[in-house]
Length: 200
Image 1: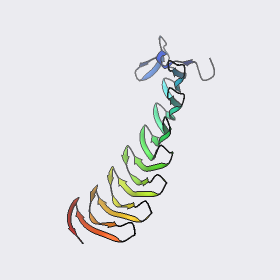
Image 2 (image 1 turned 90 degrees about the vertical axis):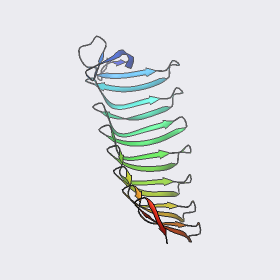
Image 3 (image 1 turned 60 degrees about the vertical axis):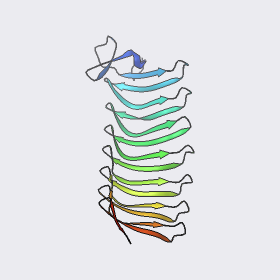
Image 4 (image 1 turned 180 degrees about the vertical axis):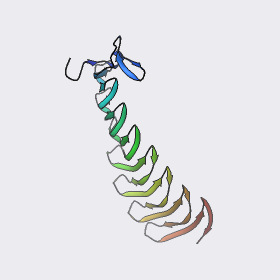
């Protein structure tokens, strides 16, 4: 036994009243846990304190590559959590009190950032961006309480403005502008409460 307590398999723990105990123990478990695949590769590792998850927790693919990594505070996700596919990073998410709160980033197979969102209490709330494979900005806008709000701007892959759309409470509302790749205006459409009302 070390200063952090014993190291056991998670299968050796049982739950009582929301806390983890070693089998036949009377005191909530404090120590490290590890689980392994049949091939001996590490599958999961983490720490409990007084029967609750704390600190850094990691899980792995069966080839030894990391799958998830993040911090837990008092049995709840807190801080940055990284999720990996077999080829590399998939997402980075910010949690507070076990809920998405802050920036969430999505990555493609080439490792390039392709989407960036802002969350508040499990709802999209704040700036939002999408990118082309080369990193060029594709879309930017704003969400409010889970709905698109304000101006959303979409770009052609050459950087020229493609479309400009105004939203109100999640619905198109106002003049939508569409442009050709050379920057020339293509058309303007008027929307009201999500419905097309005319062309200008």
